[in-house]
Image 1: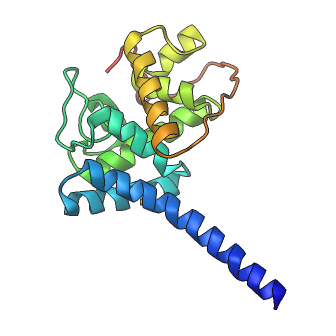
Image 2: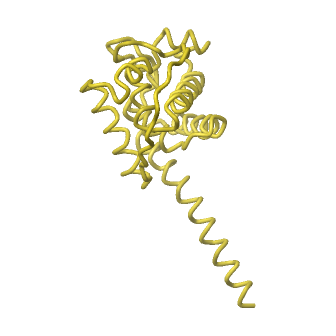
Amino acid sequence: MKYRVNFILLFCLLFSTIFSEDNLLEKYIFKNIPNIDNAQFIYEDIIRFSNKYEIDPALIVSIMKVESSFNHNAISEKGAIGLMQIMPETAAELSIDPFNISSNIEGGIRYFSKCLELNNNDIALALASYNAGYSNVQKYESIPPFTETDNYISEVLKIYTGSFNKKYIFNPVTFEDSDFKFGDRNENR
């Protein structure tokens, strides 16, 4: 009987931990996107594509909040498009329609996944690559000395660690030449 009670308590604790993390993410999205149908659609795509590319959905939500504040119609001064603020050249190289919500989310997550891979899963350097281009991260062998990029990384990590109670762990990275193509721009978006 004692083991059964412990098992039930353990199961409830595990279930509530899993549920509360998803619930926290879902609440954050619904709080930031007033249209319930859009919020549900975006939430489902974030979960689906984050799972596909094995990235924490809370990190993607943090990126999306900083990139576009969840405005799927956002277009930056430099031409970045949609929720994940994908540059037209990057969209072409990814073979996606950046104006399509699902395509924009998947393309952004796929591109960020590649940034993580190129930077040995160092989140800060992957964010720098996403924002300023991988060539700049290689050039400086670190986060490029751009105020916009510094602010971008700080804001994403602040949301990620603050709103979702995630821990950020720095990974030292070695830099090597790469023939990586898409998103390899030499300027900030």
